[in-house]
Length: 406
Image 1 (tube, one colour):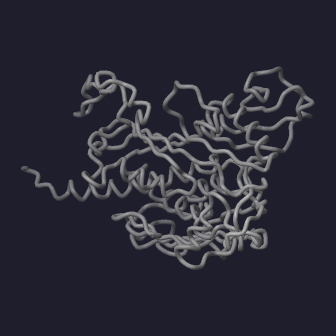
Image 2 (image 1 turned 45 degrees about the horizontal axis):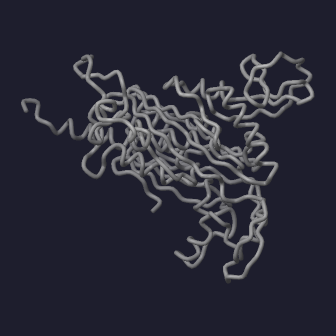
Image 3 (image 1 turned 90 degrees about the vertical axis):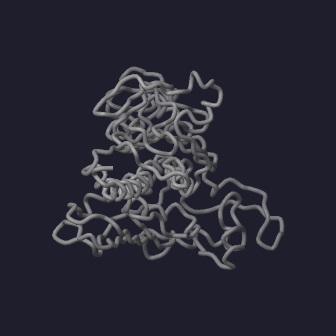
């Protein structure tokens, strides 16, 4: 279905090559300051055409608030949003009308509905996630102002290249600055530049070079460990040159989440987060806290021991549980990771079948991401905000219903 949430409810519409993407969000409290500018920052982080390692589709993704606000403040009524599609090229998908793309939803949409959008994947395209980002950003603004909640996501791996273990918290500014590279002319003896430091393609630091070797290629990797970001960017360029794609993982941390959010047994916090994350296109896995690695520990190693009390709440020094106990937030950071598969639509020739079952070779045309993870970051952050916002509303209602003398 195209509606998400209970107390804060989001409904989205629109296909990849339709006139635009539409979202309606109901349940946002009144008197919150809100303009298009508040939403646009995250949409810009998500938009296509950011650099040479993303799709070349050039969309500005400028959001319009159609209703639900007045004089820059929310009214408490449903907010309707529109992001027009400008740079559509449906003819790029002429060949896939008769050939389902391997790994894509062309086949299952056709079987389920007996019809499908003829270009761009329709609703199965990541273009649909514009609506998630636009609405999630509104909820995130309320969570920040009401509770001080911070949601930060970053790329933690690309293919078999992984960030080293260590620092567990980053700011959104650090994710963007430390994970943004300037490509250099290889003749300079260096390959990338970031934050005053020059790097070779293997992530090692090298001597500085003259500014004449700088190019206009600004690459947003959104991995805050710059040497790792360099290695990922270089590998993605190689993969793109081979008309192929690659996947990876992202890590998300939610700070200052109040204790007590989450609704056992079926709406546990991690269950709703998993639902939200696995609804994002191309996601294939979710783990919270220690995740699968925690299965190799014994209980005595994995248990987060309560070691002190702060502001009336018990605290732990470790966080193997990832911020929840029994599906209810514990006051620790919520920490989870999402696995993202390689993008299905690739230009590399693949032997497959057409819809009639005839053998054929598909070399997909169009403008597609060889590596989608840098653009996934604001999507994960926004879907997280939608879950936390819904559970916060639920907990506020529950708290208001509890008699003071109980």
